[in-house]
Image (cartoon, rainbow, N blue to C red; front, side):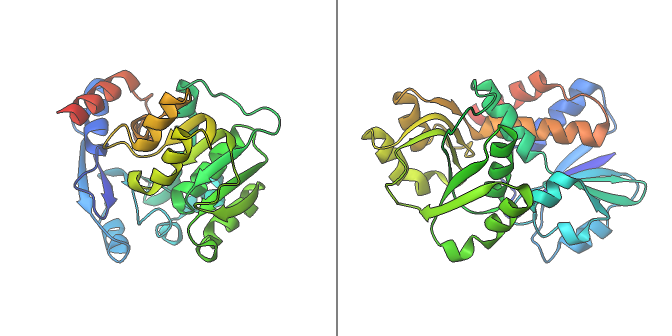
Length: 273
């Protein structure tokens, strides 16, 4: 059986390492997993070219939203978030899933966060597809409202639409607004250097997060993660997220429990090579 990760650019992806390690640990000797450069314009043709020997596809940007109208069915979570990072191909049908959300929750659980109690502030940096997944993760942890720091509120329409579908309230603030000084949970969905302002705020004690999830996995640690750790925050990184969302994909595509330890070992080795 075949599987692949699609995106543009895609050469840097760690997904092949994780999925191939899973196949090896599961004894799936006839399975393969490749990285395919694919933008939104090419996506319909790539999907059409996947025959009965294909098990599924992993999707990165800019395809998580673009794939939705090309699916036969999507799980409710993918529809609510407005993004699918996984397509399971079975019986000639395409079913979309979002494993980013449970991946975020699992990554934070490893850092010690299993639920948000009371009026804990959730601050999300960014307003793209990953930020929409962060909204759903915050809801899954018990949050009823979040604050999102965005560069341009006029471009946050997808985030606000996702919030409406998820039933979670969102307050938009300027990306460099100083009004949030404490956060039970800080989730950064932006590139490492884009979060430097907030790393400096943590260094100065102007922002104090109890937990941080930074979706960047290379290079690691990011300045934001380094600042948070020095400030005593519990930190989950992009590799933790990538590992858990890939594990969800492996289970969906193969029907078998993902061998998390084997995947973690292979991914960590690839990052340090």
